[in-house]
Length: 174
Image (cartoon, rainbow, N blue to C red; front, side, top):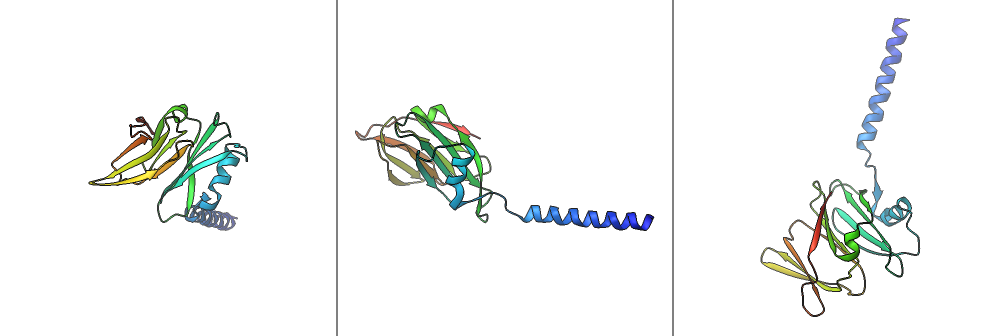
């Protein structure tokens, strides 16, 4: 009897170890091709809403919005590492500041950050500073925008069509 109990416990321990190993080795999450579908499903976003999105090496950020731009939902997904091919939802919902300004999202364990805005300030250009070097990104003044930028970008300045600074941004650290 004692031998049977030991054998049964050994089998259970081996099975538990095998399940734990497989769980640890399996990269749970969403593939890059499924991120938008997953966000729409998880946050119940209507299929007819538009989306503005940008994809980096580690992060994908999206703003879903209705035709009138009166309602919107945000979704930000990130990978655990560049070696991974699966993304995990890191933020989802509606940040009121995105509706009136620009919000920067960053996460402690992710080197990239995302800038999201419904673009009420009518920004047409983002100037990205990378040390002494600058890069320009064109934006559409009539549409929301999303920028995913690496840690090497030290400053971002947004401009309107007249060359005025199109507003500061709020930082949301998650």
